[in-house]
Amino acid sequence: MYANIDEIVEAINRESRNYCIGNLQGIRKRLRSLGCQAGSDIFRLTDAMRRGNYAYHWGGRDEFQFNVRFIEKSDGNYIEYGLAFSLEYMWNKDIVNELRPRIERFNEFIDRCNGDFSGYYVSVARPDESVEVKPPHDLYIPVCWIEEGNFISFFNMRKVPADLTGVHAVLQAFDDLLSLYIHAMS
Image (cartoon, rainbow, N blue to C red; front, side, top):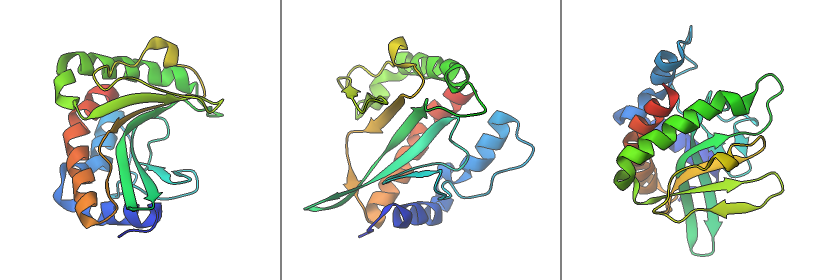
């Protein structure tokens, strides 16, 4: 059983080699026309990429980001996972206008493939710490959520054990989400 986000991220990076998501940095390089690849790991934990018990993929601060969260409960440790848009302030970017077209492409994809994501939900966390969660059948991100400071998540409702079996479930889910990620980022 993994005891913290660092151990989970280390296991995801180690086990990702047999999954399509293991090439996330190559996919990012191609989609964003980057001059060089950030590295080969999905996650690289720095203080900026770790927010408490959350982590987002290496290079993902201004992208549609793959996210994992460590949850400690009395009956065991769990992993929550999915994709997110962080509209939190960035000193050198107009993050809202940069991510708006990606959110629109997310909504387009969801309109076409909503049934493929029946185990997911969409929520927004606002700077005032209020949270709004939409019903699982409604995955469309409303325009009113696209505001600076908001954190919009598209997470799986099923939390998995924070162990090797759970890590493989997360990696398989990330593989299943790659087409959505690529569409939103293109």
